[in-house]
Length: 464
Image (tube, rainbow, N blue to C red; front, side, top):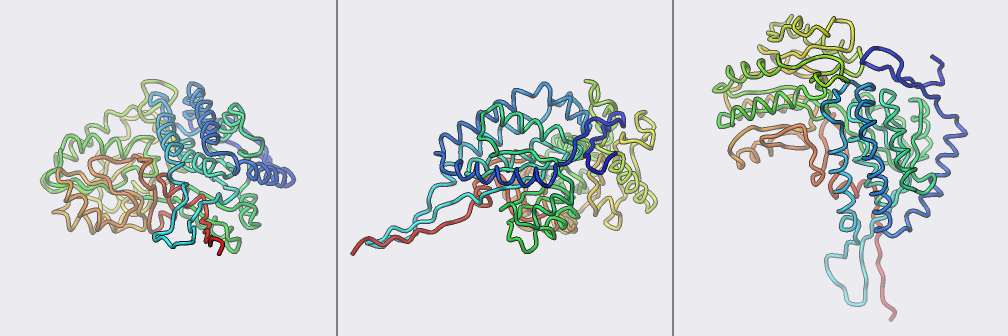
């Protein structure tokens, strides 16, 4: 492989799926210049017209679903039976378009002063760089792309090497919608090139979704450039099944929340704390459901669990599982029942672990794979302590019939989102944010528009 190429190796069969040359420095410079020029015009386009253009882009993207679903399976392993990501893409995009006018409306001063007009307006930051991950290549990127454009910004997209074709699909849809030339550009960049763009202050805001180490690299690269950052990094999202939970609903939804997309979900459930009343039945029910998964080629309709996106990701989970068992954990799933898992590929059998504790990496460090640890707890106090015993804080799920109790527990949890009786979902009306090593900033909701604009105050005194 040439040093100037970015290559996607399919986890389906280990073959090269797509190869693209990285951009030259001259091409990067030209892309930034074109984006700046386009943004100066775009910011003056009336908001209703911006909305029509962004909706046209969305419609063009949605029309590609039939081609996109198998591409996702080939690039990162999600089974085609689940139909891709465009249902969520449409929900988020249309919501952010709908609230743009209200979110960007001038904010009047709290008190009136005779003889003065005072307000705060929201101005676009200018040029936004979106660095998107492979696990949900469309859903994660759309969170920033749509509000950034609606707010009057230009957007540069750098997609993960594992999902190069997703970036090209975005560009294709933008072009088909007739977006101004240069306003949105899909760039094929190396890590070093991305760092140089940030360090040189060529963009005004960067949204990065990825690992904690990746987020630290982004911060280092942008240091001193005054580029604002939005970072969604690692997670180890917990769930708590209370004594008063709807048992059957909890088991079914938490197994899906832990194993959908082979566990490669930012807000997937990675550890479960179950009240002692339900513990034995919960473990039995979870093991039964997990044993029903069909591990195999994601292009086949019968497959319910595809390979992980890369062999190295599967190897990490294998190491975590082995370490847990060596420390006394019990592995409930016989990997031999999942013939596709031969031990040295991206295909990995799911696993349910009990007798786990927080000395084990599988209960502390991000797994991002099809494994989950289940612990017995005596009640709320113990559950809260264990749920907070993590360097991460993206979401936490509480399973209970008591809304007030869920809110009260949520107030004690160190997390960005608190769910009750659901998990692994983003509501576009609510801010998507994290605490601790999970990151900084917020996407979605009206708060996303605050990240993608800057305040400009008007203090206007009438003529005397």
